[in-house]
Image (tube, rainbow, N blue to C red; front, side, top):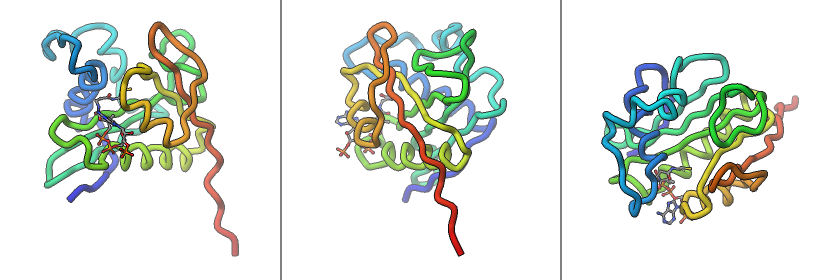
Length: 168
Ligand SMILES: CC(C)(COP(=O)(O)OP(=O)(O)OC[C@H]1O[C@@H](n2cnc3c(N)ncnc32)[C@H](O)[C@@H]1OP(=O)(O)O)[C@@H](O)C(=O)NCCC(=O)NCCS
């Protein structure tokens, strides 16, 4: 059974493990050792100081253990990741543990994170993905569209309507 819950700083080791999976999504590409790569500047900056305004994480648990995570953060023109659009648009990252893929967890996490962003009043979400990554199909089916590119990766974005206010 899978449940999705908010993540916090205690989940950072799992978020790091999932960030490593997102970096090295391509099974055909060699992977550096996790312990070595987690010390690199490009890796460290992405989760450094977790808990600043705009940070949100969701963790999917299956059979009582973390199975996947999705999160977003705000960045600035001076400090950002590959999928940066503007300072008001958080950039998301997502990964599911290798043995848990293809069971709907990624889609459930992405849908829940989109709702989290909408409820938080953010105008849009962005992300960076290789056009070769099958994850692109997941993003496009959720409505993300290409708005630019950075190196060999595409920047996708999803505009968010404010959550409907119940009447009555
Ligand atoms: C991308 C990822 C998070 C999707 O999670 P998941 O739990 O496997 O996905 P789901 O079971 O919910 O499937 C959702 C969609 O993902 C897409 N998809 C993702 N990976 C796929 C793959 N290897 N082959 C085919 N389709 C894939 C399909 O469009 C699928 O849609 P469908 O259900 O209509 O077939 C997961 O495969 C993963 O962790 N990949 C490695 C890390 C990564 O690439 N992260 C994104 C970096 S930008």
